[in-house]
Amino acid sequence: MVFNLPKQYQHFQRYRKITQILLKNGLGILVDWLELDKYLPFKERLNRDENSLNKKSFAARVRQVLQELGPTYIKFGQLLSTRADILPPVYIKELRKLQDKAEHLSFSDMERVLIEELGDHYQEKFLEINKKPQATASIAQTHRAKLKDGSDVILKIQRPGIEKSIKTDLQILANLAGLATEKGLFPPFFKTDRLINEFKESLQKELDFKRELSNMNKFAANFGQNEFVIIPTVYEELSGKKLLVLEEIKGIKLSEIDELLNPDIDAAFIAEIGAKALMQQILLDGFFHADPHPGNIFIVDRNKLAYIDFGLMGQLTAEDRDKMGILFVAVLKKDIDIVVDILIDIGDLDPNLNIRKFKLEIQDWFNRYYGAELAEIDFLGIIDDLERLLYNLKIRMPEEFFLLFRAIAVSQGVAYKLDPNFNIIEVANDFLIELLINRFQPKKLFSRLLNKLWDYRHATKDIPGRVSKIINKVISDDLTINFKHKNLEGLSNQLDIVSNRLSISMIISALIIGSSMIIQTDMKPVLFGIPLLGFLGYSVAGIMGLFLVISIFKSGRF
Image 1 (spheres, one colour):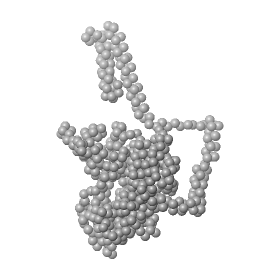
Image 2 (image 1 turned 90 degrees about the vertical axis):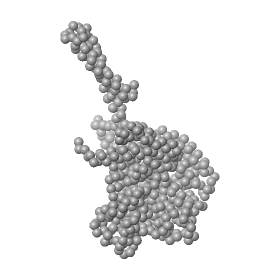
Image 3 (image 1 turned 135 degrees about the horizontal axis):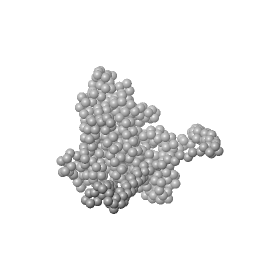
């Protein structure tokens, strides 16, 4: 076996840091459950300094731990904050407070990435670069610059070493999640391995700026005919895997909404443009900005919206878009059966789910908004109630589903700040009517009919041949059925342990019986007046019996 000592030391140091931060935030119970005490220095183990933080809830302490552990754990917490199907509402609410902030690095550190991407003489491509960062985040840092032609640009530079750091944290996170699952800290429907894999894939995409560049080009193409939605130009010849050179958007961030006292800005129009843009992304394009928080959207020229930061995008298939459109209509029309059918079709259900109870829960959900006009319905409240319902019924939904609802909720919040009288449901209703009219045009119906016929033909073309093969195998007595067991490894291990203990017990019994028979004889030599062989038999039986009793007590099953 080859040992990577630097890597092992790095992991050990990180485990120690995690343990110390857990204790600092009053989460010693997690240290004990996950058996992390061994990573502390001996003196700290003897005198554990644990802050009880009685004034903070458990969820708030978890959020604080993730914040202090840095980029990977902040991102993981943000992912969990979108998964209302696997975490209780109190944790969702806390994790949504996580801020993706980091201390800025000196320009000399960031320069290493510029040299790696553009070469030693990268300065020749710019008139000037502002060495003071414009903004900092866990993965990247941005700097203002000016190109040779005088264009103002933003350099989005990946933080040096962040990929290696994230890789280490992902390995540790996977180990801790697996250990927590073994200890039974999560309910059975909480699939930690699947969640960690989703998170790993998401982070790898976000670390590849070429993918973000591709996202921007696709988003720009989708809104090419919309004069009110702007996407910054990307200078592809200067961009790479760790560097993006973007047009600088000159406008006002929506995060500065409280400072928008300029009467020239048409806030109500901007809110409507944002809502329509979101509906287009979801229901027409199937490609949506999954992180549309106020810091990622600018108001430009009084009545235009500019989107930035395309690292996190969501995608929906044509079938998903149809289902979402029907789901929106069903919710607006309060059609319980359709809502239930679509949620069952999209989701991963608990096998023991009571469908009747599910329908009654949906009915209760609708009753809260019975008789209300569209303008009076709080869409954020609808989403919160639906997420709580899915969690209580243990219905797992695809990641895109919650990215989508998060995007809608954030957009509703932003629009409300722009215009307190704005309601996204009214815009969605008008958009859906237009969409349905468009989709039921004869040309569109014929195209979708052809697609369905092709799917049917593709699925059924091999059926006669397959049936014929099965019949031939039955006739020739050559039909074999393979059984595959699942989740029986634990039972196999337990059976091994039981059979081993029974074998040892039988050996002990045989030794005792045999030794007893020998003692009744005058066999020599003797020890303490009894045959030596009988004495040795009793001794070995006693030692084996002692070890068997100890193992049983240690297992905790007696």
